[in-house]
Structure formats: C-alpha cells, structure tokens
Amino acid sequence: MRATAASALGREAWARRLPLLPAFIYVFLVTQIPFVLTIYYSFFSWNLLKPGSFHFAGLENYGSIFTNESIRIAVWNTVLLTISVIGISVVLGLAVAMILNSEVFGKGLMRTLMIAPFLIMPTAGALIWKDTLLNPLFGLLPYLLTPFGLGRVDWVNQYPMVTVVTVEVWRWTPFMMLIILAGLQSQNPEVLEAARVDGANAVQSFRRITLPLVRPFIELGALLGSLFVVQTFDSIFMLTFGGPGEDTTNIPFLLYLVAFQGFSIGEASAIGVVAVIITTIVATLALRTLFSIFQIEARR
Image 1: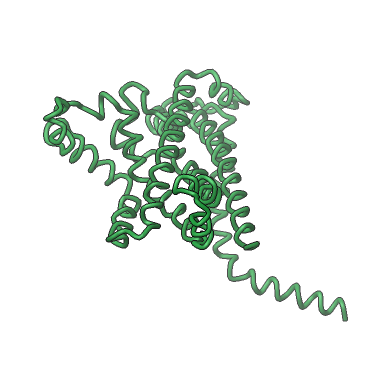
Image 2 (image 1 turned 135 degrees about the vertical axis):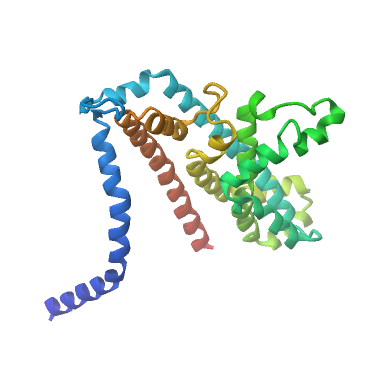
C-alpha cells in the first residue's frame, strides 16, 4: 500500500511539473547552452579577423583581465556608475515615497508622472536627454541656464560620467520609489500616532520607526537596482559611446567593443564569464534580502 501511495504521489508531482517542461527546455536552450559555449571559448584565443588564430590559450584570457588597463578602467567605471546611481536613486526615491505616502493633493497624478521614466525605453530616454534636453545649441537645459552663463556648456562631452549618472538616476528613481512606497504603506499608522502622542517629532519618528521598517525594502531596491545598473549599456551607447576616451566605458560596453569592434571572441568570452559571476553574486544577495522580507511579513 505504501509503495502504491508513493507511486501515486510521484505521478501527481510529475503531472504538476509537466506543463512547466516546455518553458524549462526553452530557457535551458537559450541561456545555459550559450553560456557553456561562452565558457568554452574563453579558454581559446580566437580573433575573427585573423584566419587560423583559433588555438587553446588556457587561462591567458582571464589573466589579461587583471593586467589590461582598459579592463581596470571599465571595472572602475562600472563600480562608480553603480554606486552613484543607486545611492542617489535610493535617496530621491525615499524622499518621493515619503511625499506620496502622505496626504498631498494630486497624489495619484504625481505617482503616475513619477513612474513614467521607468516605462520609457532606455534608448529613447537617452536620445531625449542628448538631443532635446542637453544639446548645447537648442537643448532645453542650456536655454534655462543661459541667464547663469551656462547656456553653451556641452554636458555630454565635458561631463560624460555625470551625464550618464543623471540619466540613469532619472530612470531608476521611480523603481526605488515604488519599492520603498510599498514598505511605507505596510506601516501601522497607530504606531506613528502613539509616537506622536509620546512627544516624538517628525525627525525622531522617521529615524526610530519609519527608517528601520523600510530598511529591508531599501536594501532590496538597492540590490535589484545594482543588478541592472551593472549591465548599463543603452545609455552609454547612445550618449557617449564610452568616451571621451574611456571615461564612461563600463564592463558591458567594453565587452561590446572587444567582441563586435575588435572581434576577439576569446577575450570577450572571458570578460562575459566574469561579468556573469559578478551579476550572480549580486542576484544571490538580492534573493536573500527578498526572502528575509517575506519572512518578516509572514511573522506580522
């Protein structure tokens, strides 16, 4: 009887998993097989512009990652871009979420307008910033800054990293705002009312009650945002093309240059493998934070 029951449970489990099998096969074919091939090519020296250059190179491509000056610059630019964008976006997202969580006129319209940048395609958003807002000849920002003597500043070429960070902050602040707002709306208003009755002012209530409550949501937003900002490519491609020089070349853009401009498949594969490892580490931290939030909410 036990064997029959176990067999029935096994068939029932497979019956539940069977509808997911086509999706699993598709994901495996389009993600895992190419990644395995990338790992394979990373151990070979292969340049498409040089016939007969395909040969085993061992760890040579990985060694060049730590000795190549361009790669070190790309890593630094990636770290700088990620920390700047996430830090500023979290602060602005928290401020906007606090406003939208209060009783303010036009809250629904403000929420819709704040979400809009996150819904615009990154390429289209970068073009709007470059050609409509920041163009030194007919851009809106230089026109507004003309009375202050900044009307002819070429922001994209003179301050490339600041420009990219600004565009990415504009794009990711709504994402942070939505996550933090979800945390604020889960707050029990009776706790704030009790703190107010006990004599706590707004700053004390925020530091002692609100901030600890939304801290897991801030961490989740920062980790998830980092997972995507690390992979920033569209804005850099459309705004600066990695320049001037290598001022805004990050790891994804360097990978593009090595693979599709230099056609060095082996070196590009090694860079891609390292980038995937870094992204996986960040994703693991994000998932752990997400699970901890679920556990906290389940205990309430």
